Length: 147
Image (cartoon, rainbow, N blue to C red; front, side):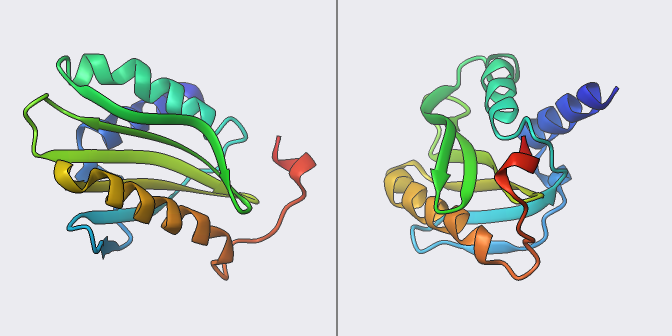
């Protein structure tokens, strides 16, 4: 049941970003917008998000263009996964979505930017992901307890 709910939440976030419950939007210098929202922590994140996103994209957007993806990366103390795509080849917007985890916290990350600024936006998003561990409400948990 929990797995089905998690899959539904991911599909809803991919297809209907407004359902993600934005906690705040950051306007990026590249001309895009970034939203970071709390999401439920699960030890399978971020890899499960990445795998589900790649499996879902062809069904949600059959002609999508995958710009970049990272199944598991680490920035400082934050582990993350990221999928970047255009919904259609002629799209003027790039979408960057991912999940970041630190200690017992998890966040959903979503940015939309002009395709012409994709590289700059990607760098800005990665900088924001790395800064998540310095949030005052991010409690430390031993790595052995996270998995």
